[in-house]
Amino acid sequence: MGYIKEKFKVKADELNAEVKDLVKNHGDMKIEDVTLAQVYQGMRGITGLVTETSLLDANEGIRFRGYSIPELREKMPKVKGGAEPLPEGLFYLMLIGELPEEADVQHLSNQWARRSHVPNHVFAAIDALPVSAHPMTMFTVGVMALQTESTFAKAYAEGMNKKDYWSYMYDDSMDLIARLPRIAAYIYRRKYKNNVHIQPNGLLDWAGNFAHMLGYEDEGFKELMRLYMTIHADHEGGNVSAHTTHLVGSALSDAYLSFAAGMNGLAGPLHGLANQEVIKWILEMREELGGGSPTKQQIEDYVRKTLSEGKVVPGYGHAVLRKTDPRFTAQMEFAKKHLADDELVKIVWLVYETVPPILESLGKVKNPWPNVDAHSGALLVHYGLVEYEFYTVLFGVSRALGVLASLCWDRALGFSLERPKSVTTEWMKQFVAGKVEAE
Ligand code: HAX
Image (cartoon, rainbow, N blue to C red; front, side):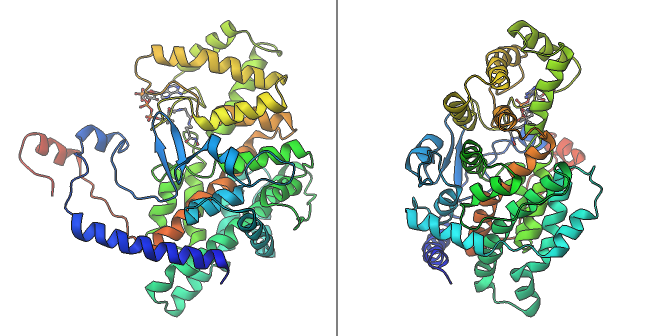
């Protein structure tokens, strides 16, 4: 079965007993009251999900099993001579709840290399789309085509005991994570590199091999991919991609169906697509100003123009965070170390100085600070990956690590079908008038 799978089972049995105990002895405890505004405004702040892999603090940012991003960058195993954490290590941490040893990371690299075969019909399904299709559309089509390989779906069709759900979910998740870089690289090379494809190198780590298949051999880019795949992996459970994956999975949809659903949410401009929108916005600003680097005043004018046109400033704001996103800071530190003189990076930093006071002055934006998407594009452009419509696919490959580790936990803990109550505005009016009561 593989020792990581066995270890996961032991951890899951322990936690399962604790959860049963919590629900049995404290099931009636009220966590918080829900306001009418929360129900209308995207359920902000309502505690309604359990996600074991990570926890978000509004001011401090994300912690994966208690570890912040700076701690991960320090403590996680790295490739020989490298400085950035290996995403294999983060997956292990999210799944098992303990920091990995070198051997654990090596084991996962080997497992994912072994499981990475993608059947031809997946490439044929992607090829059936016009080259002009958005890469995220190709990505979800590829994932859906791969669903033919689900061991969970096959076992369920044959009549599986619910005690075994976790085991098939684990195998599907491992297979899917192993195969995603191949699908993503295929999309990239098909759309942007004349359909000339690069065979995987099974000796490389997961992110290093992904960079290789995309066609980037620069060690700096490989390091960037290791960092990128680590910091985009998870952001607790309520964000659109994680929540959707969890919700769809709660119907016992397999890992492929659930993940594809989550990716359709990531493809929205208020979520993952913001990474392409940021670079597009900066490039359009530069073009409008006739090229070169804009001054702070010119950026300020462009931000005001964006707002006056009823658009959001991409890369800024967050539904939960109330400070600069540590994922932004990690990328800024990477840039300071490797590409401090890059023109686009300097613009990103000048935008960072300019945007927050303007958003703050509007008086309605709850978080004027940059999120993860404000920086990533400039780093990718530096290494030559200029095709910004592809950026959300990179985010999606990384996000698989978090949402699939969570899905394994969902099945191991026997989580229920998700089905919250909804009401009508007519019901709300009657509730306000004291004529009806919540159940
Ligand atoms: N630019 C302009 N206006 C903004 C804004 C921004 N960056 N961020 C928030 N606002 C506005 C909202 O549109 C809202 O306006 P209305 O009341 O007129 O509708 C108001 O400020 C209050 O919004 P909020 O409570 O501060 O923010 P929400 O929790 O509703 O939304 C969003 C959070 C991330 C969607 C929002 O900040 C936004 O649209 N940001 C720009 C898009 C973006 O960068 N998205 C990526 C977020 C991170 C992520 O998921 N990455 O994948």
